[in-house]
Image 1 (tube, rainbow, N blue to C red):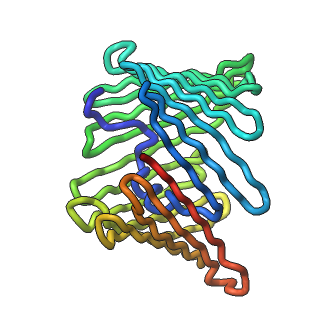
Image 2 (tube, rainbow, N blue to C red; image 1 turned 60 degrees about the horizontal axis):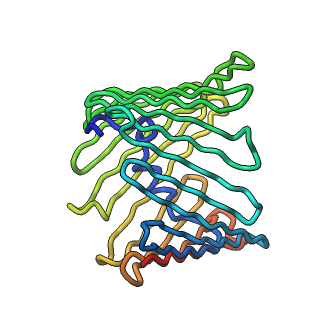
Length: 276
């Protein structure tokens, strides 16, 4: 694949991951194993509130083909088939969730040194089509996204964004929700390994004149432990601690407190991911 500007979904992703990734209020455990034949198996159990759910996923890679199957406790089977370099600089992804046969989807991605394009179509009788395009370089990229409903003849979404990336920082602006919201974010890395960083994000919704400002960051205590925190102008304070208990296996403890309603019970989450 090329070293171009990346996909449209990558615009603003670094800030989003810092402010949302690994924060949860559930109890989750996942165990991964690998067979000698090259099959990766992952079993996951989640308890959310008073409900419990789980799934088993298998992944097999052969040359340029990646095959994923996931079966959950509600008898849903999600199958994903990924084929890279079917044509030069392209990737094709097909997915289907059984028994919902209308969930089928086919996506094609094309990567160029100065542009990327994706096209996705739902495999049903009234398909929706999603198209994204990004032009630029790894340092600066401009992108747009559109969704079209072939049944109603209406656009379901249209979004535009720009990102500027430097060795120690990244900034992005995204105009989304059909022009109703604008989100600007900035990430600054505090060390050469990019394990410690500060992030700020502001979102404005024009239809309601509502502004949301969030600051946060991550700090590597040592090579095994990372702490993260975030706070927005609505008083929501979140924090987490992630520790690598054994190589590749992580323990994550997170919490969220509403500082404007301290009488409410804080939310706590626990996640354990065990890998060989």
